[in-house]
Image 1 (cartoon, rainbow, N blue to C red):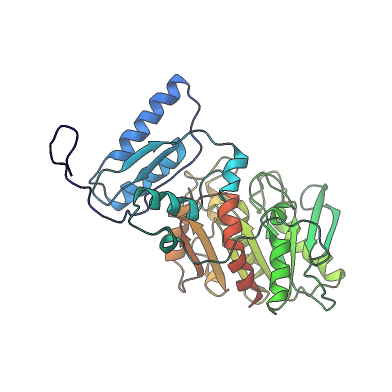
Image 2 (image 1 turned 180 degrees about the horizontal axis):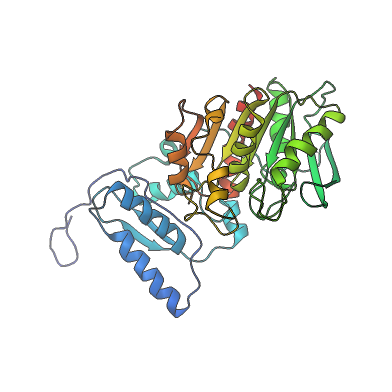
Length: 368
């Protein structure tokens, strides 16, 4: 092919792009922000990096609003994306980022020779928050005063599968940082339970409860203990309401993912039917932990889930996005387990879009 000057142009190689591609809302256009973004672009275009270096650079690209698509050892294709509203991002299915479908779709645009349909992962459709319908589960709400949390009024929400009159076992759903009992509803639990009934899978209830914005579901230096609230107050209350608490499941996102692992291990293999940890907020040392996650080095050592023997005796499922800031710590946790857990690592971030996309498989796993 020749250009306007008559010189022969070499055609671009017909190659399939490895999906090192991230799109996220850009930074505001302040002068310091522009300098920071240029640095992100420089890092994202650098070639000849190790796999670990590239993974870290992907995280930086994700943070600074840079899209990168490239092959290992080669320079990537760079685009700085315009700002997106939260509503627009949610429509693309990824909270504050872009989910796997959006990433693969943009990859296909960069490589037209690759059919878009062939790139889309075959996975169950995510559960969106449900509207009112007679076919959806019954929702029970209430509150109690928790002595373990220092006398704080503690709200709970119970999602029940539709049309079930028998005794149900509960799955305790633990929210993330700054969340509350309703987080599991935002992730689509109600519709998920209804779908399980349609598929003839064993029914169960999902119970969300307030644990505090940054309690991390364990005993703190001020004496409060959201974990004890769950094990010593919530479970006995559920038993008095007619639920079968002889064996319970745990489900949690982010801070709640850590909490699910921590509390499931404390309750022990005899009573914990299974633990599903999604994007768990795990830290490999106290120095690396977030502010208020742990009170001290000793607090981290007492409450870390790394190397806990009970977790090798309880059925586990762990899901985490490859662009999640907790990816490396979660990978380390999974690698030290004696038995590989169900679930796995897939393209996605630390956001509601990823969590909704994973929920169908997680609820089906908890039903087994």
